[in-house]
Image 1 (cartoon, rainbow, N blue to C red):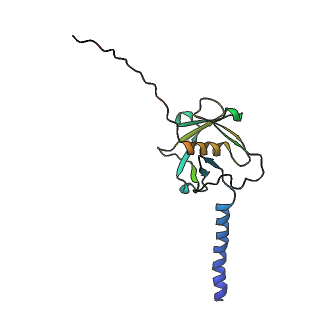
Image 2: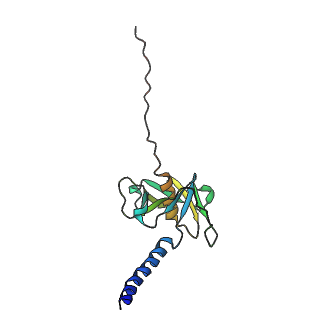
Image 3: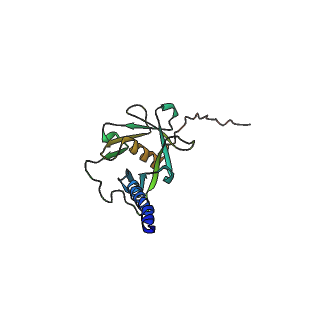
Length: 164
């Protein structure tokens, strides 16, 4: 009877471990490599070093990302026509930096407005079976951050006067 009780308590733990393993290693998450460093969409938000969020209100955005219809017009393109991901496509010597898409933004993280037209800080082209436009926008903004906008400045020119 004791063996049955031990078996009954171990089996649910083993099943939970198998499901947890599938959750973490189930499908590959979108990943890019930039300058030898790789960035990947995090499975769990608390694992990520970088966070981004999205808004439907252009006025709340800190970064505007336009989805283009031509790869030539994009700053960042994702094109894959293969059924399986290429092994080692996003490998680097260091572990990937994780980017999470937050549902509620904090004050210091980029807020992305994703659209098909209008002014944009970044332009992306996505034709992929494994990446969505949101994934691509989150990774490029996670990699580069919010662009620093130049503010218009007025310059006053002072002419030297001759003192006698």
